[in-house]
Image 1: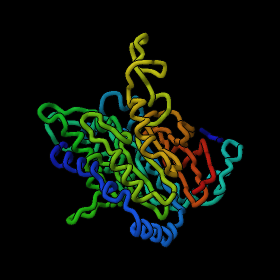
Image 2 (image 1 turned 135 degrees about the vertical axis):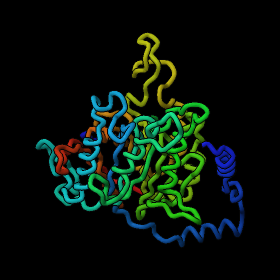
Image 3 (image 1 turned 90 degrees about the horizontal axis):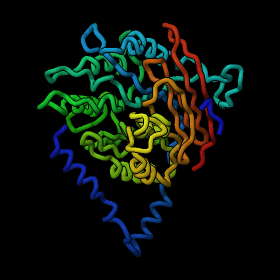
Image 4 (image 1 turned 90 degrees about the vertical axis):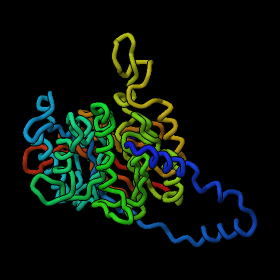
Length: 386
């Protein structure tokens, strides 16, 4: 492969328990006529929808305001400024008028779409760390400035410096690890999860701005389809139980069996990946976490990864898009999967991808300047089967 490479515990617990029971056990092993009927139904299933979906992926926005005019400590030095987010948003908005890269640094990209217009993306999917400190905590519970800043920039709208496309929210460790002041320890985690739910979960009484097909309240994982392409947002990572989170793996297993058992292509999104930073362990000699350590995992463990891999085994997973590590653009392969990680959003990074029935293409790029200009840095494509 080539690469340019809350709690409302009662509600959540009850829902999680019910999801774990599932319905599959009620349908197993029914012999005779029922089995024949099932085969007949399978033979008469309509062909799955065609696939031609273009989307943008971005991660690690790190909205950093703590007041209307002040940033968290060190944010300005790290480049986590509103000006950089505006530059990023302008670049994403301008992508639909740009072409797929035919060459990068004079080298052919091999993209079948090279030289063709990118066109309007179906949405922008976020890969976690929308905010720098749990939404921007205050001493007393209240909406944090960082979450407001994120929404002002990365929620579909027409205001200057605001994205023009539907946005699919995703959370990372910076959104979920920050404890509030007792007794409101979980307040800001709940605020971030509520933001995801209110943007995507449909109810009898409420239609969200970006509705999805299948929303799991217990884990805030969700899925949707663009034609014959199935997409799943797994938040920090599939199976996360950090800080009393409830694993969504049982939900994921049911979701894939329900919506993707016909072999259609699947794209997964989460915050952690298989890159060295995501795989850090405690190094007792260096007294820190690094990629040489042999101690406890820093972010997610080998058992976590095995559980996720076991859940998605046998399905047509085209790629996993992730964030977490900031400066390095990556398109790489691990555990038989193709993984895509752009540079952090506050540094201008993004990925634009196109999935068709028999082809996957992706290009990584960065924003530069203040007029929506971009430079493409890496590209990758592969044929699809199934």
